[in-house]
Length: 437
Image 1 (cartoon, rainbow, N blue to C red):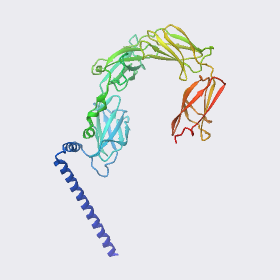
Image 2: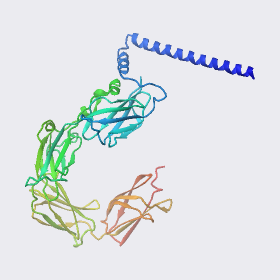
Image 3: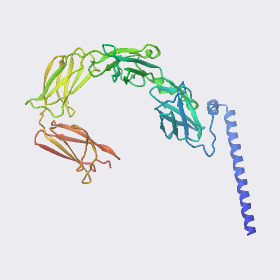
Image 4: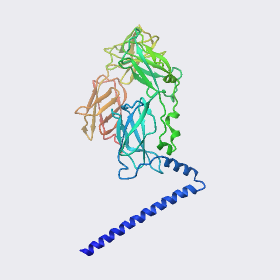
């Protein structure tokens, strides 16, 4: 027994000595590599990159090197920053900067967030509608870090009625100036829409570039920030709309976000109404038709009215003429090129309003599939019942594309044709046949 114990102890000593030799060899090899990089005649870029990496404080590569990170975001006054999303990135020495799997995390109401770490330097980027990083954000696993943010420059103002009373719930939209549209340009603000609060106030926050963080600097990515390459409008129209008022617009500049002068928008009463009738050639009303009215002077001003029993009515109109377009199930029925507030309009649809009812049955391997969503043509978010069936009444004869989707499965598209005769048309969609091989 004593002899066996001595043999075990001898083996442990040999194993420890081997580990010490391996570590010593690894350290000598690392020193040799660094010396070669510093003495090479063409190693200027390598030395520069090594210098950048050395300037980034590397977390310890101990047992907690891959532990999660946690932090609290505060504004310039020390108050927690609510909402927003944080994107975590990792830079390991000698490797490229890469996102951390599972590293897109939501900021809680107290400004805190938690996320996964990595065995290198963890940097964080912020996506928020009103604040931006005030400094580079570098996180250390296992330690809660306080991260500071600052508010973006903003264009602010209020919306009032003709008597000067604040209008809550008004919807504001930034649109290009007519004739100056550029498909490659974007608004200079984080969002192009806003809604007035209970005091009638609104704000648009301007896009700004945050300071570069050490991870991106070490990876030579600081000059590739997407904000630098954005083409934005210098001027835009800010439109405001609220129930009971016509659409009102003012011209705003991106530079107004730096000026301490709020924008005031006064809503005006609407013009007279446009009323009308939409029926087919035989005088029959359509089942699900709508009429769209677009201002000819203000293409961004569009109104929609449902047709009820063949009648439609537009209010909240502005000055000038409107183009009317009647549609059902995505099919254009009729067009009136010019109609003015106060007009009574008669529209005659080119398609039969008394088309067949449509019954679509969705099956898979011969069995009905309930709980699927069907969109397209006469269906908008329709759900198959226990028999796998959706039904639409008086469908306009036409060619349609139906899109079928459901939980845990991808969407599939199906072309169908609805004829002009018969009380009911039945179509069966077999999802087994639509599967990719």
